[in-house]
Length: 246
Image 1 (tube, one colour):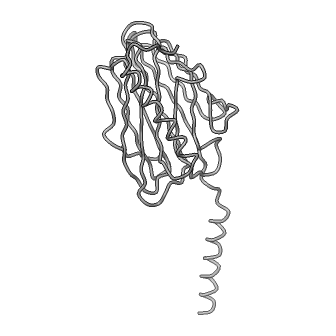
Image 2 (tube, one colour):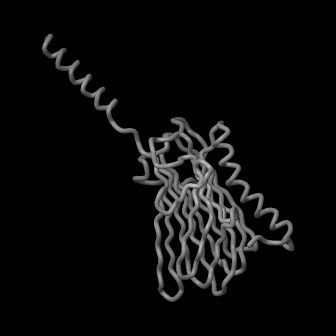
Image 3 (cartoon, one colour):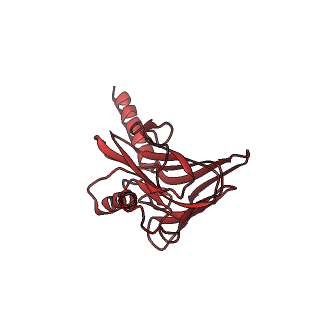
């Protein structure tokens, strides 16, 4: 009996050592683009922190750009994940093409899908809110937009939708919308938007965010960055004759 108890203690000790020595989950941010133009041409790109996503002087802020045959985007991606590293409890991301000279040109007919995923998170164990937002301005050729927001409890192995998603067709001079949901034990967030354009070369603007707001100043600031796009679009709708940024 004493021998069996000793074996059990050794087993518990070994298990504890494995848990103690196991590396923490790694946070990772991925931004991908997939273009298909009306002539059958395609272009894809996948950016991660340090490769395609270039850190700026501000912590957790990265520059990005995509150059396809019919689309060119440049802007910033703000995230509380920061550089790839240990699991983080600070969730969310906000992409925008409207600051620091960022822009979104469409040169012709086609579709562009942008997907953002933020994995390696450690969100509250109880039900907590998730908010997805999209906003922007249409230079005249955007004909349809669909956006989906989702969450994961297995670090991106599978995702479930936050809500029914958002769709704009036709697309007005400005557009804005949001979805809300709740989740527990979440460790990854993902947002995807597909934009359809007709012929013509125009300048557009786009803001996309997904956050799990918690009562921390940094998180609330990131949520504000995403919601700022909604306010921008509403102002454009209220004042359609106002000037636009290029």
